[in-house]
Amino acid sequence: QAKLQQSFYVEYQQGLDEQHMRRLQIIESLKDAVKDEELHLVLQPKINCQSGTVVGAEVLLRWQSEKLGFVGPDEFIPLAEQSGAITDLTDWVCRQSVELLRNWEQQGKTLKLSINLSTVDLLSDALPLLFEQLIKGFPQLPQRLVLEVTESAVMQDPEKAIARLETLKRLGFSISIDDYGTGHSSLAQLRRLPVEELKVDRAFVQYLSEEAMDESIVRSTIQLAHELGLRVVAEGVEDEASWKVLQSLQCDELQGYYFSKPLAISDFKNYLTEHELK
Ligand code: C2E
Ligand code: CA
Ligand code: CA
Ligand code: CA
Image (cartoon, rainbow, N blue to C red; front, top):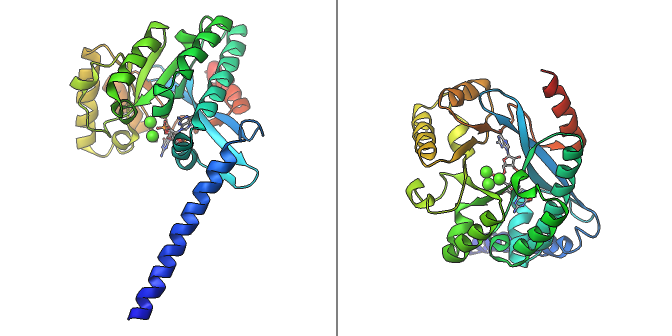
């Protein structure tokens, strides 16, 4: 018995050591990810709910590490936040996004991009400075770039985060509350935030066409959000039936595998052309 327990313990300990090692390796490799050009962006189309046309995209980060192979954002973003590397990553995402927007603008395309900001980004002084600099080169930026923050990112230091969101709003940016419904805040609390958009978490959207309860939740969320003057985006739309439900509930914009997975930039360009023809 004791021996068995010991071997469990050894296995458990080895598992922990391996996890710990991997974390350290990720943190170490992330330091040079920008410089070594290991990052790229993918774009997931955002769709107008009523018309089905493309209005823009969410920018999502991908990391193909030379040492570790492909590492998903759910794994490396939290570690980048811990190590501080996130500041460089977000800087890179912002600059790349500006280039995309500038190119589209030159082609007469008015699209919006949404980027994800972490707690660290929200509280650091680097961000407003970066945006002020980027706006000088591309004055339309605040009208084209939506900033997604999660409720938990705001709640870590609400006073400072809200002050920062106010600053970003004054610069002209619109703020979106990501993963809405997974945290503990009510819409009544969130309405104190300077936000313009609510993204209903995919947990409520995924089974929308099958679960009556989910439909009730999404319906009342959309109603209340609209009364507060917020735009509502549903993420994780995976089938046509859910789209139809969201249309009937007057949702504003959609994202999800039903329309498209996140796409490489060149594939997004093709997607745009195909969907312009329709
Ligand atoms: P998120 O911001 O909630 O992004 C949406 C995630 O849902 C993306 O995963 C997307 O690929 C996935 N998704 C989209 N449509 C569907 C669908 O119909 N069904 C399902 N099951 N999933 C769908 P991804 O790209 O793996 O990103 C995961 C998370 O990593 C993001 O969640 C975000 O929190 C974080 N992340 C990604 N890129 C960045 C970034 O540049 N900066 C920061 N701070 N975080 C990022
Ligand atoms: Ca997001
Ligand atoms: Ca989300
Ligand atoms: Ca998320």
